[in-house]
Length: 250
Length: 248
Image: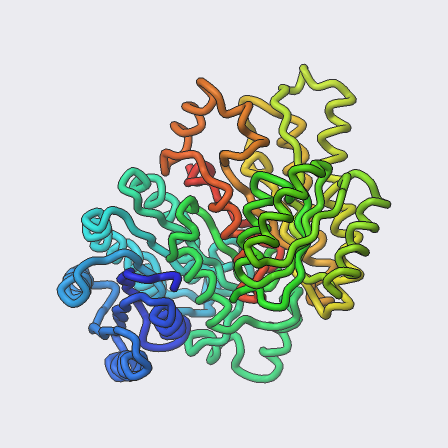
């Protein structure tokens, strides 16, 4: 198994991509802690994984709260003894362009998508150091690579994640801690479905945009995250893994 | 197994990174054909894999020859019935700086490192179409992303591979054929052995945030991810495996 003896923390793990990552990680032998504000869905995902023979713990986590992150990482270590892998997956999406973006929306976006990644990284690093190294995977987006219509605050937040990842990679390589960003294109998740895949016309637009002629599924992202989490990628740090069906290659 | 029922062709598979990829791919269930100009090393790798229970065929291949590529792909399909994966791994390294590069040296590097990738891709695509899709993995380099104190022809050739890969990705996505480039940093292989002596080895380690030279396995696992259906939504992407070198 590719994550045997690893302990992984996944923010936003209650549903969507985070939940699929949690299931895949536990199939590959990891003990998984999922943190989320969605308590009911989080407990359901936890129960599903445990019932299928995996080891999983759900903890309530508001990624914008330093105290909440400290409690969550402490709970992970209390339960499973250490921390090897952190997936900063929690995030929100908004479609507003520059002029439509209120200051409140901007702040909320950067708090959750930007500061949430910073705080998770900050509290994971000391535990990874104790474990002799670790792997941090930050879910950015193709919106962190290129411009496009709308989603101004979202793009800014995902661009911040891209470079924060490289800063982490360089600063903690000496501790054996790797950090990489994943850049999904349009993926069918609870976050994107109400916006980018809301109706048939929107789905057709998403299909037309990707050279591979489809939008992605959470599994497409989860396998990339698995590669970066495992020791198979032990020489990979500060890299960007683009999983977008070819959208940004043209 | 992650490559069950897949047939893979690996150029430059006789030794170094290509041979390690061939071994890993067969462990994951693929049938592997290795093409190389190094007949003796190629047959040795073929024998090692077959003795370990894998299915492997060695074919002689000069990647600069259109006719040899055609024969190599034909031999693959004759032996294993189809082609799903192509790893354009064959390449040479030369350390000359701009003023020291002769016209012949430039042509040789471009012929092997770039035209070799083009011809392999051209020969593989019709067979991948018949197979209902495929995955092409082109070994570029961090030298295809940034400049370096030594080597200019090599750097140029790897930059060409980077963009040729994206052209392939966009043009053949409707056929279900994916194409991605891998950008290794400094890796210990027979190709780099001569270069990685003395001061240059120390310099490379010091420029690598993870403070080591990479191994052929580091690259092979990236190639495995891109070869498998786990990466079925990944095309036109660049997988950098460089210990953090280009992130700063």
